[in-house]
Amino acid sequence: MERKKILALISLAIILTFIGYIVYDTVRSERKSTEILSTRNDKGPSDQWQISQVVELQKGLKAVTAASDGKIYAGGESFIVSFDSSLKKLWQIETAGMTTALAISGDTLFAASEETICLVSPSGEIINEWGPYEAKSLFTSLSANKNYLAVADASNKIIFIIKKDGEVHSMIGQSDEKLLIPSPYFDVFLTDDNTLFFAHTGKYRIEKWTIGGKFISSFGESGSDPDKFCGCCNPAHFTIIPGAYITAEKGINRIKITGLSGEFVEYVSSANDFIASVPLDVSSADGKTIYGANPADSKLYVFRRK
Image (cartoon, rainbow, N blue to C red; front, side, top):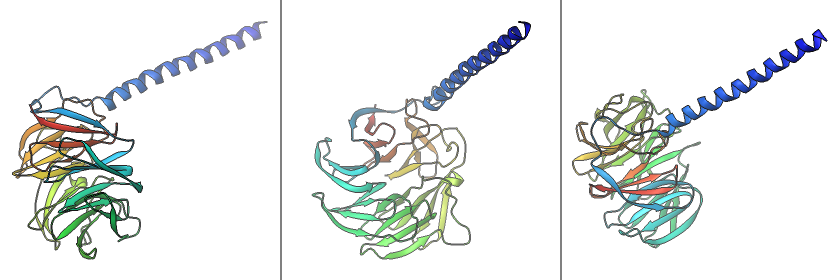
């Protein structure tokens, strides 16, 4: 009898311990979830922009680019869609896989998958395909001018400069000092005068190079202050507008504008409820309207000044 009581007490203790662990794990998970979801900036400079419009797209949104004629293009899991300046849909096409990046030059839209690049006409027809250029590529960003297309390959940690006939002009990142790209966030921007900018995410900075592979300058450092880039792999996305950069970060999910020397100008979005680990791809043709593609909810956010 005494033995049965002891066994019963032991069983009860095990059950209570198990219940206690479940309660503890649930509370810990909820706290962790809250930390992941909470990206609001309740201190420091306030946002000078606001969300003026939201467009819900099909599941899997990944990239956005804005053209100088007012058209907007977005892409993601098996689709590319075109909008006019009022965000009225013009056309949508299916693609074989994920559209990872977009760029527009003249009347040609460039759309990257992981290893290839499709050329799309103004009416939404796929007119050509380039690549693969390297084994096991992961194209994460495109930028085009009238002469070249810059292609960021986060897997091989190189940037291809491609001529408009699809041939490789040069490759950045093949020198003895390799680029430090720890994750699939690797953005590029090519100016009209063939100057290349890219996010060297492992070093928390934006670098300026010639397309021939000569380093010119850089700015940025790690930190949570407004003029710094927080945590690993930032800036996750960026674009250039007249006289400034627009950058998007993860860890602290914030979009901000910095001057050409890297000085903080203002927040576009910092007091937000975006998921911390999922940064928005950003694009702007004029610096007056900023488009943010959010992979977390497959929505296109339009930011304008307050």
